[in-house]
Amino acid sequence: MAHGYRTLQHWDHWLTQQTLGKCLLDAEKQILKTLLDRHFGKHATVIGVPSQYRLLQSTMVPCHTLISPLLTRDKHIHAVEAQFHDLPILTGSMDLVVLPHTLELIEGPRQLLAEACRIVKPEGLIVICGFNPYSLWGVRRLLNKQKSAPWTNSFIQPLHIRNWLQLAEFKLEKQTRILYRPPFTHPTLFDKFNFVEHLGDKCFPALGGVYVLLARAKVIPLTPIRLKWKQKLSNIRISTTIPGNIVGSVSKV
Image (tube, rainbow, N blue to C red; front, side, top):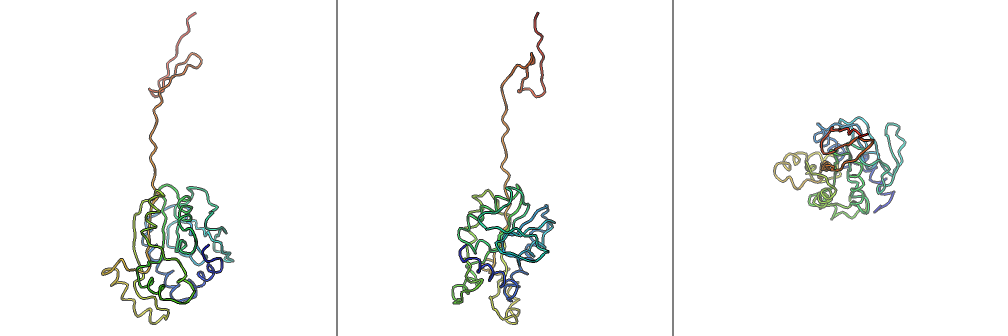
């Protein structure tokens, strides 16, 4: 990991205890509910920290799992303790995988994305949330002197992630942005700029503080091979070029 176990703890704490963190979780939960309103399946997993488990509540998928190096004592969370680069999940077993800013917290984000794509079923979905470096949140990160979450995250350009998804045989279906207002830490000041959300979505959609990408696993068609061999078995000649054609030969005495 780029910053270690303690950084993940700080990130988890920031999401639940700080104003910006709570607003981020609420905004991402709402956008996921909109994007996934028609997606059905059985198994969904979020790869992140315990506080992000609630993001799965916005889906129609019934079975939820958290994959995280952080331990949680919450009995309501079905968690699998694992490192991000080696997911202990069967290939092609998940209908939905959510990566909320997880790529920004580790070294080798492309390796994690490949692992996440591996466990998605054919026609399954993967959702990736990330901070937009070309936004007011990105400017705040550049000017910020505090070594704390989320400003220690590596803001990754969405173009890079789209290219990685394409190489992994995933088709991008939707992309959107949220949180256009300045990332003020004071709750009252942050709420006063709520009008910027509606303005930004219509006037400068590319400058949202957070981007959300939704991609679907492609199904690679298999070309059937027409067999052209004949074999004699117990005086029965089987021709595979004509389906269901079995011709019996009578032995001469």
